[in-house]
Image 1 (cartoon, rainbow, N blue to C red):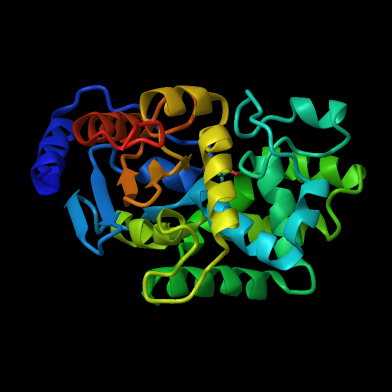
Image 2 (cartoon, protein in one colour):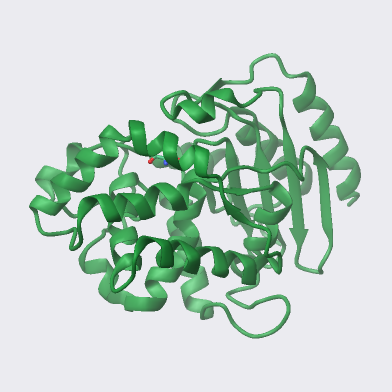
Length: 308
Ligand code: GLN
């Protein structure tokens, strides 16, 4: 299989696409991004990197950060975490509040905003927000072997000024006792984590431990094999919110999207893939990013459901 050719073809098709989706505008800073951008990067299990388009342009990883934050939180509190967050797909939008009343302030899963805000509370415990964000950045530096990854402060500020729904979610959960620390500090941590800027190449590198069953490609272990498998299971069932079923059907890979237009997708044992196209579909996931991954799955046969 000629992966370079496949990527070239996909990049060409995506460059010419008319329907590019709509760039998120509820975080004003994200609305400034050019919808014509498209990038893709694939880190393979045999150590290659194949990339195309704007693969080295940084973008706001937004909810993709929830994968790394969850990994850190599981490292701190282990399975105790599941007393405060569920593991079921929500069937609701990423910023939905509807299930929280019925379920006594326990979010359905760690990838909807409510769940990720509880995870931020866990990662913040015993720290100041600056330290908690520093820990996340150090984790990403370790995974990518690239110390340049940082927070885009303009995006963090923009979301802090307009994050009314997330403020409501956090306060609502605090009323049920499921947020332990002051809401402004928890949200400060969450907004800065979402505002981390990375390129497709950096994201594909950061996802390698999930492709490798928890191992770091340079040696040693990031997480156990069982934990890597379980994080992938959550990505498959919950990583695209109310479009997780559609993503599993069309692409068949554990994946996590962000409203910055990025998607990280994992083919266990084979590839860690990052795509970026800022225009979103109606479920808040990258429109062309999803189309590109679908073409890649069709061209390569990569999927957790294929017989290899
Ligand atoms: N920071 C964004 C928010 O909380 C993340 C949402 C997303 O990427 N889906 O609204």
